Amino acid sequence: MKRSSRLTRSEDIYRVRQVGQTYVHEAMVLGKLPNQIKQNRIAIIAGRSVGGAVQRNLAKRRMRSAYQSIQKDLLQGFDLVVIGRQTILAIDYWALESALKMLFDRAGLLKEKHID
Image (cartoon, rainbow, N blue to C red; front, side):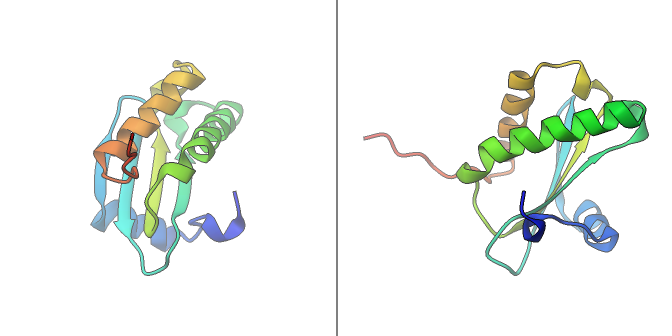
């Protein structure tokens, strides 16, 4: 992920969590808030409830990988915060990817695919 597409300032993450819309899945939480630029910025977080440092880093790597496979199908112009929950490591990668895609769909961020 490019540095410019990351949401790094704690004030920005807090603003997305407080002002933005939130969508919940048993393995993760998605927060979204429109921004003033033409690209998405994302913060991927795993709290202490996920486990120790090794488990948290594994969870973040898995969420980042799932996001990278989906990001080409997303509408642009949003600040996004994805927070891993305690069950994130219990599901396999494909279930994680489909859960993330489902959250983006619920948030209205997936581009419409036209089948001719």
